[in-house]
Image (cartoon, rainbow, N blue to C red; front, side, top):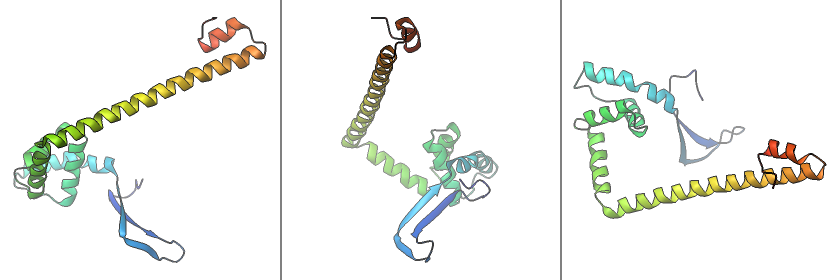
Length: 161
């Protein structure tokens, strides 16, 4: 979105452009340009190799999280490598272990995944049904306008029945 800018994380507040009045400071929109952040991951890997006791910055952590969230091999490897040394990653790993060790949480996640798959299947079925109904309507309209049935069959893929 902001290609010419080095910055990859942007925060915005709601403000009236004419008056400059801020609607609220309690609400903040944060926009992260994931591709920019991701591009920094390999540079960070090189830094960590060159300086094993390198102290992570907030931008470094963001690049790591981006790689981890994407399930990128480098990101996952670096998070595992850094997790023992960095307090933020230690806290996150401990929280993650506590969360996933709870059977109820695992069950909830499983149910959410099943619901998402059901939703996607429903949408795909609805699209398929809509396409089929659209083709049938088009074929009927062609037929009503005197078009040859064999030509209609070839265009629509419908059988002559």
